[in-house]
Amino acid sequence: MSMPFYVSPEQLMKDRADFARKGIARGRSLVVVQYADGIVFVSENLSQALHKVSEIYDRIAFAAVGRYNEFENLRIAGVRLADMRGYAYDRRDVTGRGLANAYAQTLGTIFSSGGEKPYEVELFVAEVGDTAAEDSIYRLTYDGQVADEHDYAAMGGSTEAATTYLKEHFTPGADLESAIRLAVQALGQAENSGDTRAIPAANLEVAVLDRTRSQQRKFKRLTAGQLGRILGTGGPGDGPGNGNGNGNDGGGHPSTDPSGPDSPADPTDTAGGSVPPLEDPVSGEPERPDEPPVAPPVS
Image (cartoon, helix red, strand yellow):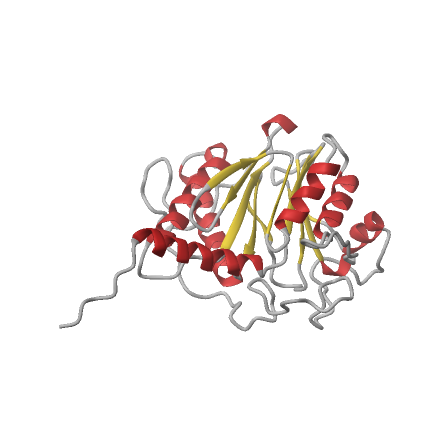
């Protein structure tokens, strides 16, 4: 009888971490920046239909890089948990910290499980408060670690170069237009070369959590016209997700990996698979899909 092949737990976890990191690094970067009236998300995205940034609840947004079908399943699970918690208790009981904790538990369980591969995703869960001091940004990695970010953060392919640029040029209390231009410049920084490439508005996805909105829902996407005016480029057809679809990186240069994990050109990037239900961080019970995920109407 042959002896089973032995791999130490340390080596197994290292291999799983390397696998997830390589998958995330092939994706296009995403930057989040705080400005005077809220939080802005800016990402390279050549797709008009597949979004990296989405609304979770009234004041909470979700952003991700990596493999689309995996982070889309996580987003849907987060929406269901938030809606059920707001319906069962109160809308104010749905918090960014609670959702971040639930995501951390799910990602940590998947990463440590030997029965399936780790998720190739990184997430931002952001919540806008009544003042800038009450804003919160949580970054979650593939293994379930949670970090509380302040002022700015980046994730994806060129994280180090983008973070360095943000650190050098970030100004607290800037207006929305300045924050968007800063984020776009940070996304254009090339890793390990110091070069900067221009990213047209057509290849950008931009959304904000705006605390000054009169509606209870603070999330909104910027239109093609708004992006064109802010960046000083583009025409009426420019806008988030209206990519050229020819495998370029947005600066007229061939992409090093046009079929990266979050690129729509990758045939594996289809919404599918399954994800364990997120647990309610208060009751410890998983959300129940048989109940209607609808929050009560706002009076």
